[in-house]
Structure formats: structure tokens, C-alpha cells
Picture 1 (cartoon, helix red, strand yellow):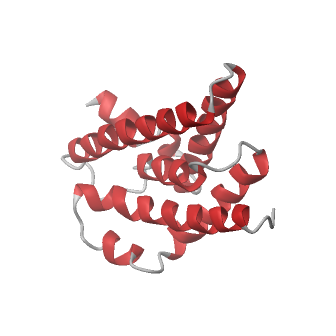
Picture 2: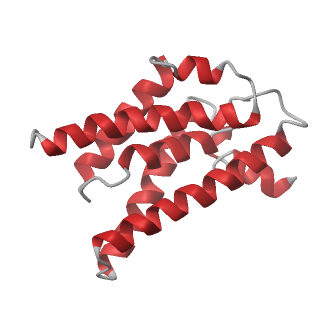
Length: 158
């Protein structure tokens, strides 16, 4: 159970006394930035980086849902300390964006906006009260943040 708690709490950031979701998302954005910094320094080409990012997101998402299912046996549904969903959501928010700190910061802010307010069907997903819904509402928040940022890139606003 210890490993499931570690995963579900985003390496313990879910135990933060204030804003554990924000702490989990902050951990997520730092990890993804460092991961892509490493890929960039290894001189990997963009398609390989994108596929690698997608594989990491999918594997951690599946592990996260499995750990969420396990900790739901001892914790209430979607306990505040479960933040692996925020980690995945912010990774999706920054997926396939230019490797610049400004985009990572914008992805973090937009993701938290959608995650906290839960507009546009995010709340409906959250209300399903399943192990998967804990993850999927943050996935959708990440998708919305990513779409806005992709539009900013295409329109060359940033």
C-alpha cells in the first residue's frame, strides 16, 4: 500500500497542508520540464520526444488510476491528498508545446484554472465518482489548457 500512497499523492505532495492540488501540479510541471530538458540535451528529435512524452503520460496515468483504486480502499473518494491526477493533467496541458519555460508556466496556470473551476463537462466527469473519473476530469482540464496554448502558438501570440 505504501507505493500506492506514494504514487497517488504525487511523491507526497498531496500531503501539503495548503493547496495540495497546486503542489501536485507544480511537481508535475517541474518533472516534465526536467524530462524534456534531458531529451533536448540528448539531442533527440521532436517526433521521438513527443512519442516519449506520450508513453510517459500513458504509463503514469495507468499506474495512477491503479493506485487511486487501491487507496480508495482506505481513503475517501478523491481525497484531497490524491494528486497524481493533477500531475497527469498538467503534463497533458504542456504536451507538444514549444520547450520554453513560458509555455510551462502558462500550462500550469491554465490547467489549475480549469481544474479548480471545472467548466465545460469537467464537473460532470468529476461527479461520476469512479476511480477513472478522478483522473479523467484532470485529463480534460489538461486538454482544454493545451488547446488554448496550441492556439496561442499557431496564432503566434506568445
